[in-house]
Length: 425
Image (cartoon, rainbow, N blue to C red; front, side):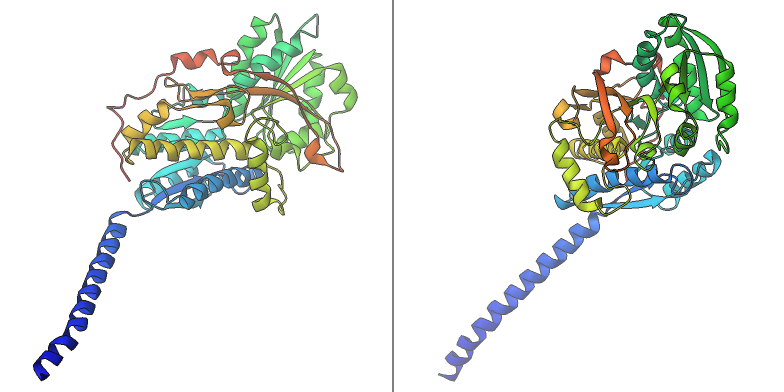
């Protein structure tokens, strides 16, 4: 009898031990699985000080929203996404050092951002050397998709050549003599944008009567404004970026803007919203918060729930572009089923999006030759108002991708995939 009692008491203990052993094995299995799947580290690089600081913050917000959406669904390939941020400054040499350190020491998986086209060119050269995919979210020099293009770089913003294609045609159609003055910022974006504009001027029957080159710092716009006035032009093609736009147009009278057609290759929300009383002429955008396109209202609501208490409480096309560019990268990794750069590059080269997915009026697609996203562009203007500055933007027209395509991109030469180093973070 005692032996039977001992055997009966021993059975629950044996079952408990078996359960504990199974649980321990399961825990070890999960731990091993977690150890085998380290996070995917994405570096956001954009100048956090200087004249593009607000643009960089807007860009980071778009990247952050996309990363958080994917993490809420379990990350990518079962791996958590970790976002790190670095300031490359506006010095291309320093930007190259930052990119090299992020890859060689921090061992990031992918890089996004830039804002400044000169910085983007420098960073992308380093990324190509290592084989790291770089998503240029918001640098809009035409050269980014031409002479500074790389196999590992994908450019998601429209560039000044796309915008000026239609802006200059419209402006020149309003004048008989068609005299054009170029006002060019002395940096990669300004020089590249002005160079891309010259053929359009000729195509539309205009003549470039002079070019005024403005210093990148633009300490006082009065001097360059006087030089432009001396050219007696009908149209002024402005390629001035960032906070320099605010400085420039704060000193240009309304009568001047009525008498001459001033057009700006691109104006970001971050150039408009902080200066609601500063007039602006015609300019180009790719998206605006008040579009009636599918998905826009929902995206704006998510943004405002998260950032509605900040200085930039409405999103502009910088945030929109960064958000969709980052989503495109993460979706490409998921489709490839690997982080191997060659496989992800091929997926990005096949990227297509419906108008609804882009919150625009026409489908968009990645040009596999230039690695530049071909997308809708819009002509817009600004009505200064201080009571509700978010309502100051008015969109006047839409142009489908093929209407504004930059012809030079058809002959872009990228490094071959075979000559691009393998990189699988």
